[in-house]
Length: 197
Image (tube, rainbow, N blue to C red):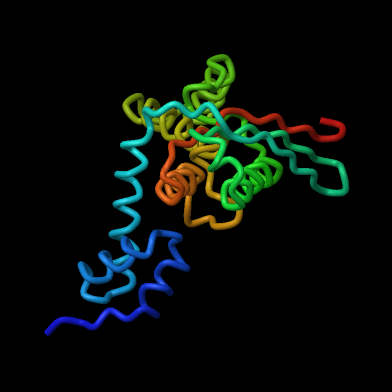
């Protein structure tokens, strides 16, 4: 017995995922009308779509600002996309604003692991080594690597939990945006300013 997929079911799924109507309908049909399974199917499709678009040139985009705490914290953020058309959409503008707001709140050190200063990482390794002192030798390296991975996930923008939805990382939010807009997007850089810092 097949489940009747209604326009309301498709509309509700589209509203909560931002996916296209036909994609929502296909996901509901494939999941037998189960909304949670349909969301998971759309997320997997979004990741696959984003991976396909990753190599494409993103030379358009926006630079936006976010000022917080009555002018005590300010962020300048550049996010690139493939076309001027997408850069002018409200969804893209809101995404750039959300990322700038996140940077103001979460204070990341860099965009990705590849950008982190090796000297900073070595200092963190030394701190972790000191904290692991007295532990068995085979455990020390695992402890150090665990602490370094935790440090990176807390300080690299793409790995941080999104302040507006802590269940998602910034990378997951970016991937969903790429799938929704149909273009490659890159969080290029940011600068965070704080009075007295």
